[in-house]
Length: 569
Image (cartoon, rainbow, N blue to C red; front, side, top):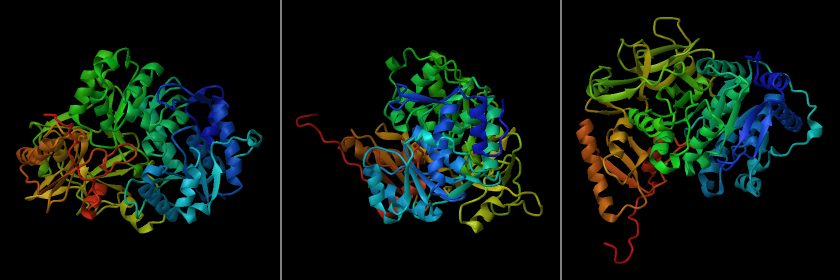
């Protein structure tokens, strides 16, 4: 049954009544063994108990930071905010090994949204570590999200305005000036409806996810989608996947998952870091939708994953490239499941001039079509007029799941969320800041407007240069290259830990030669950095602008040759 609800709190209450004994979440804390599960009824009880404590310290509309690992504690805290009518602010929990950067980001977010409460959970000493990092944070009320007092489970949810804000999603931008996207109840439920329709969900659907829960893809596309669809989600922490990618595949196989996915790099890891012998016994035939989004989708990755796992039941028609951003809640374009990806060979030189001309040798992957109730326009970012068919422009979107703007930034919100086509009253549209082109109804995303590299009057998309650079030498780490700037053009590349002095000397010239041959541009500066030091989001997405900032401030970690054993040749 599709729920009738106007807020997320109403949705949870509906499921607790209608599907009380049905399991909604299963937890695999080590990525392999199930520690426990929650039914809708038990989830409702635990959320009410925590919401009772939260409501004693935070009034409706106030903000609560959520600092909890990817576990039942996080879900309980997030949903308790909905029952208490408090605006949830999920945040990546800073860890002691990354204390300086993590706590700086946390303090900036807290300063921006002015919370009154912190809902926390974590290992012993974690609360003290965070409190000691900031007197301002220490002064807030701290409530343990892992403690369930069943005597409080009679709490009655505080009514929420359907036009109000459910939570703030802070984007992966500047640490010094974070932007909180205001995700309203209406936009959130409109997005869940879209995902439910496109994915053809039922209560028999099974989601498997390793994605971080504080991030929109993990939270909205997995945790809350299970709540909306009345199905179950099997959840493991991101680190368990990164350590051993085969754990994700084994969970899909064991739980007969129908839906799962992640950024493109996740599929790359499953090809490169899962030995053939570890694939034995996998059965991926249940998977109907393997979504791929949040970063550029590569045709070579889709082909390699299919070749590796088709012998284990994987149907390539399940591959589901999609496009989205926090400002549209999650997904902006996709297609009905089962159709497989759309790829197109185009002329690279024409694409660099802003035109899509089929027939060349440069392969691009489509990101689907606008779904129901979605309008999409490709617009000249300077004139705000629609571009001619087949031309690249800024992607503008409209629909009921477009969010309410940025917290405390009315002027920027008006500029980004209130765009109108020149000479018309059509709008408002969300200006995504992304570039793309539509061909036969399919959206092809070409890059970020702000990241565009212009050399000799031609547009170069950084991901194209990065893809070429990372295959220029075997010691360059895949998915760990950033290209930026046009005067000078800089390429930053991670090298593998085992790199020798001789190999290190070869990498720079190899990258410079490959980029010149493939794109006709000269790289002015090549910086080789140590493995594992490229700035990335918690979900593994490359942070190109953070890399550029680190380059400009001189804080990148230079690569050094691996120590050689004495007497080794």
